[in-house]
Image 1 (tube, rainbow, N blue to C red):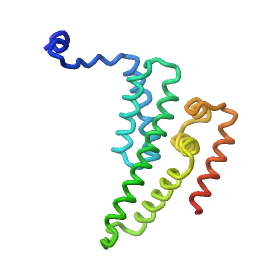
Image 2: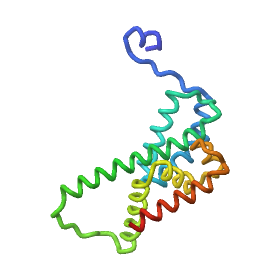
Image 3: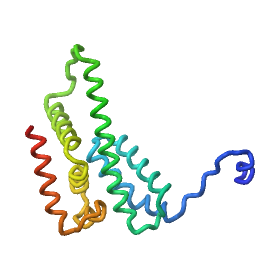
Image 4: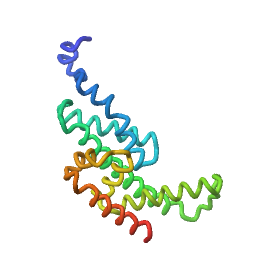
Length: 176
């Protein structure tokens, strides 16, 4: 069935992906996944975040927009933080439901320590304000000050100060 027949039959016809979007996807996908992975800590979740981010961008923005990379990076951080917060809420519910069930850890002690540290970091990121959490995720996701400034819509000269404040807020959350 061709596109005209599909339209007459009331079916949705997918539009072809523009080459500019495909190029943007190929160029930025790895970094978007890396930013999300840094926050959510799970490859599958990070790829889901990247998919959501690219679909959202594709629906609302031109692929050749000059702000595309910074928009994608910021959206990856925000979307991943939302996944993290959702996971945290779900975890609290599941913990409350399974209270009373004794389960022994099957991982070695070191693996448990690493998992606990990662969980503490993710929990602390979930408790600080979104801008600070995004800033930390972008910086430790490998973005430069220039890229962070573009992604968050701040001046490059202010990124260092914002980063120090975000790190201090993070430290306070980890200590408490």
